[in-house]
Image (cartoon, rainbow, N blue to C red; front, side):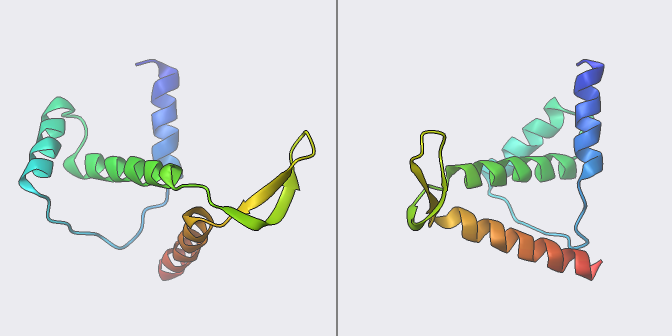
Length: 109
């Protein structure tokens, strides 16, 4: 690992706000075994850090996997002048809900 990599990790960890709510989950035996294997492979990461980082990655990938659904409203034109239609799928609603919950969680702190 280089200093650039290390600084990137520190920046990423320092820039996020932690929610005051704690979440408790019960894992399947297979998922628990996979988590314990990661704990052994990466002993400098706590179990909680690994869970938080894995969940963060999974949520980001899930959003990226939402399909684009072309809406009816034109929101822009591309460089060739073709219309760009709004996304009528899950992504805009999800992002709005995320912002709503960010505000709620910040207000609680």
